[in-house]
Image (cartoon, rainbow, N blue to C red; front, side):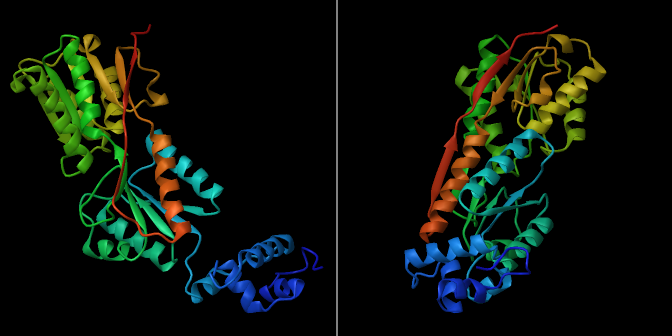
Length: 337
């Protein structure tokens, strides 16, 4: 028996404790199919008992991948993406993988982080892609398993998990129309993003289905994570000859920007505005006006995405075309205060 705390335990010591070859220990830990399930179990139990920590470079030299799964998000400043990271981490931990998180809000950062994950022989990547990834990013991602989350970009993995973006904005806009609103402003993300294009289409579809003149709609599109854009978009609405009676947003960050701007500037008629906000953030609870939130099962979506990827990694299966879609629901809060 080798006592803990007497120095770094080696693979040779693990092998000696079991009476097997050092190569058997390495192959068992690398899940080599030439090693029987019973031997793999014995080796892993002995390694854990002795406190053996396998060298990642040694594992990579045998041609194996790491137990790392990369999660690439464009932002982490709201609970929407924070929930994704938390759910994905729990999913990976339960399956014996380690989540590596990075923020990639530009094609340059995206390429850099993918390169680092590739050099670490990551087992797989879950990525919320930028609208226009660099060619080298696509080439690197093509070499190992990855899944697109929320946004969808041609040229990357055919596997995608996301929200039914068109329907959630259609339903939100239809909710306002049903309450008698016709002059409705949409503040959403640029159509350069797949999510932005789908949400704008949903907004327009609600007008079409209701037979309302599309000229009554007001559209303001820009960077979905830019609070300044959201504030400027709200301010511009009161420059219209006929300001809107309702606002619907197409991004969590824009919802926050709209509420903050309305609370700070208090334009005439703002207190009577009906608002449908994308996202059901706890941080919106301070708002005392009328608010209907587009709430999404984002935790369940992230868990489904992570589990689907891990199942294929464990089975050695190819990443085939797949579309996992979650539906949003409207949560209306009465006026408070």
